[in-house]
Length: 145
Image (cartoon, rainbow, N blue to C red; front, side, top):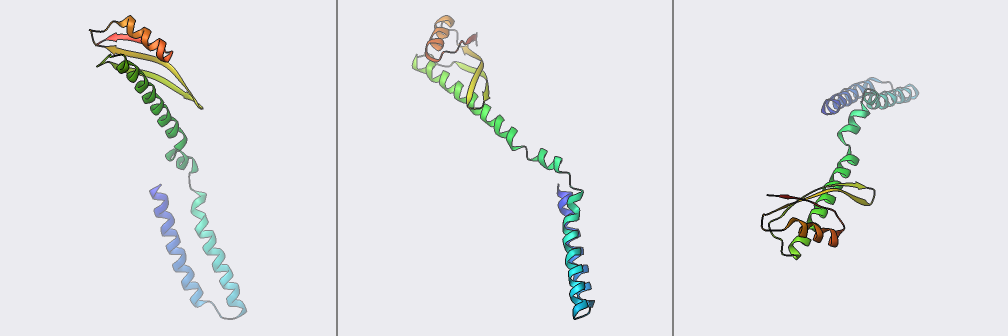
């Protein structure tokens, strides 16, 4: 990308220098107007010519905003689900539990693929599983620390 900008800038500078020289030596009057039209066309073509070699596919891959946005949305959805489950656990006096989940975002819907709760030894796994199912509707997997 930077090579393209560098070559385009050099091309523009050389074109303007050549155009200035030709406009200084062009005759006055009707023929002078003709030369100025030719010089203007030359400047226009030389400004556009570098774009004929430009790789627009490379430009699109550098700025793939849509996939970045989708990835960010999925990360936010995952954090949202984890925070909801952590708050349910905290409301039920279950402390120091870790939550890991896998979610997929499809349009405006969040699909929870997997939720794993990492429990300390002092809590009963079946009770925690039941609490999560009742309050969130998610079937969680329980593992110990």
